[in-house]
Image 1 (cartoon, rainbow, N blue to C red):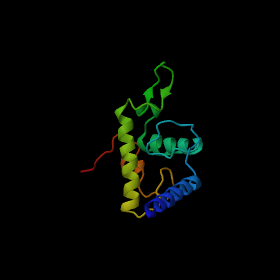
Image 2: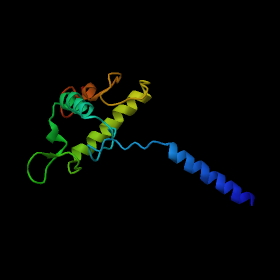
Image 3: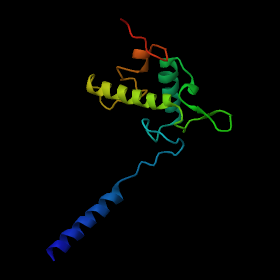
Image 4: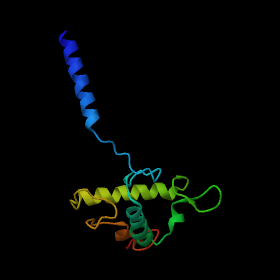
Length: 132
């Protein structure tokens, strides 16, 4: 009887807790976001892609994003190009370094409080130049 009471209390607590949690459904506008927030606005996404990626690396969208299957435009959700996987790794690395070494609280790509960004090492070049 005691086990049944505990089980019912736990089940009730779980159901109550799950009912009060608001799921982050995002706006559903973008697919296959792995590093960027799923609920990112188009203005935020464009800012990151333009200011951080395009300017920081001196590349255009087609550097990381594959061509669309129909030959018109780009397939932004596709993971066909290895550069996209590398870019995700670099984004994660940048966020981790800002948090771990520069103590930036809640680092977000495109935020003005980041100490390190793509441009820190890339300086407008697709491949960073290492000084010797």
